[in-house]
Image 1: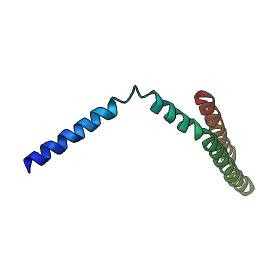
Image 2 (image 1 turned 180 degrees about the vertical axis):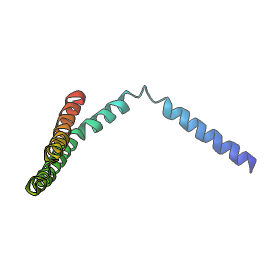
Image 3 (image 1 turned 90 degrees about the vertical axis):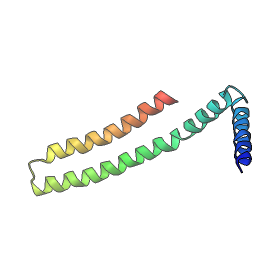
Image 4 (image 1 turned 30 degrees about the vertical axis):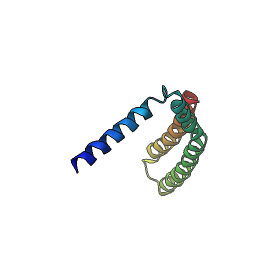
Length: 99
């Protein structure tokens, strides 16, 4: 039983050494880079869509506060507008950094 464990451990180690000895990993890094950059367009569009939904919800909330005469309307409007601008700017900046 101990011989089988030693033999199987040796086989696994030899297989691992062979896997690491296949190259310098440039092909793997290139493939990973291509995969990550492939997700930027859909992710950017998703962030823009989330920004639009947040803007609509914020607009409805600000309108409700304005209609009820709440004195805190400008603060709420500024925070919702700031959140929308942040989403759009963050998506654009990330895209320009990585693509």
